[in-house]
Amino acid sequence: MLRLQNKKILFYISLFFIIGTFNNKNLNSINLLKIDQIKIDGLTNEKNNEIAESLEIFKIDNLFVLNKFKIIELLNSYNHIEDFSVFKKYPSSLNIKLNETKYLAVLNKENQKFYIGSNGKLIKFFPIKINLPFVFGNFRQDEFLKLKQTIDKSNFRYDQVKNLFHFPSGRWDIETISGKLLKLPRDNLDKSLNLFLTLLENKKFKNSKVIDLRQSNQVIIND
Image (tube, rainbow, N blue to C red; front, top):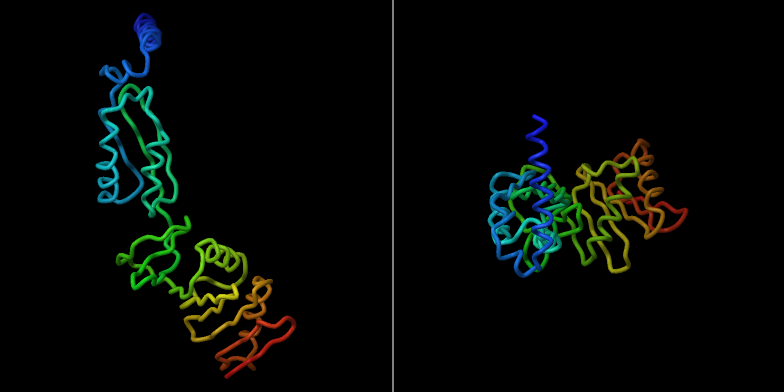
């Protein structure tokens, strides 16, 4: 067993010196350490296979000098990927672990439907078995993510949101599944969301349809 291990060590030391004697041009021309397997994991089989096919172009590369940045650039072009890890497994395998983004809302943009992902990217719409709110207005994805983060930190439940409306002034309205419309101010959203829940617990406002919290220290109720 010890003799076998010594042979392996000797092989890799020899390999190191052999590689060191080649420049990049010659190194890419030899078959040593050529990629012969790319393994994708983390998504559905269909999506894994789609991405694996797009990575076939890297099979002509040498694993030792493979430029990870080219792979990162390609993987970043898939908007439904949240993050990923790329591992070189010597002598000839490339293992990639993918994490799919979370679908947070549906946006209708230029007569096309998109999902807004937790990675801030837009994903072309396709049927999924998740009830998601619709978002209306012209806004940056980071503005929506900031609102979502604020909702998650409050006592208000995001799964109770039916529609979200963004206005040019930068503020939001929230329509709930129960039919309540909450008009939010631009600032202090967390306090407004918690106040909204407090008002809903009051029987006096049980049948109120619109709760306007846009003005500081003022609540306007419309039935």
